Length: 279
Image (tube, rainbow, N blue to C red; front, side, top):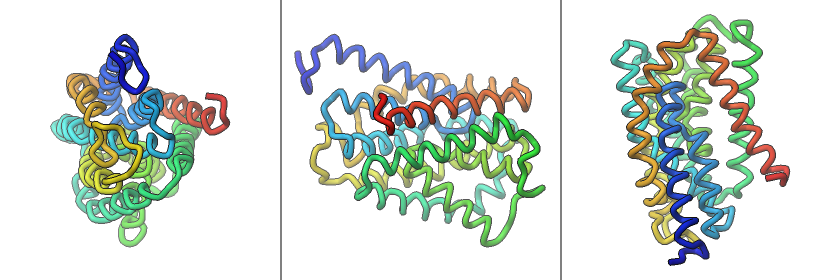
């Protein structure tokens, strides 16, 4: 049996990789409030390349599929953190409209942008956050509290736009903004998980529309969302999200910061090597 030039054994190995990646994604979603897109996007991009998809199609397909996977993951993660009273619902409500506007704009850009645009956005956001978490600590602060008015609206829009281009639930960007404004890391992670719900639903829908009728997509794709990728990763993602939530609340502030920083640094390095042509 062959599909896209791959035999049955290779296809089984790819399926197993996606199932395991789903489990890791669930833990990260609960632990860091990130939705897990920083794991799913690189893996899906790699898998779609094995299936022979061109890079300019494989990257937005990976991003759109990641956003679809984040929908159930972020809902479960947000519920877990909300039950512990850690979600700043006032901020979530105030950011709702600007986030959705940013997400929609990102989906429109996705239809026309080259693959390197997504990868550079990914590296810029993830690496800056990693540096802040690992080396900045409490010294790196812009203000003692989150702003209101136009700046708050801009932050919400920025989180939505960058998350849509990266295929993430917004945690990597929102956590950076929150901690720079003195929000405690546990509260930042929990609120980021709730923002993932606002980002992933319109984001996935936008990528379906952005990729509709696009040439070179896989047979299972609906726009820029792969049904096979979604089906293989979601079940294990949901199984492990609760564990990630419990783990987040068992760690100290510094332990959580270092763990998140090392994770983002590793993901950034992977994309830097790819952009440099090493991977």
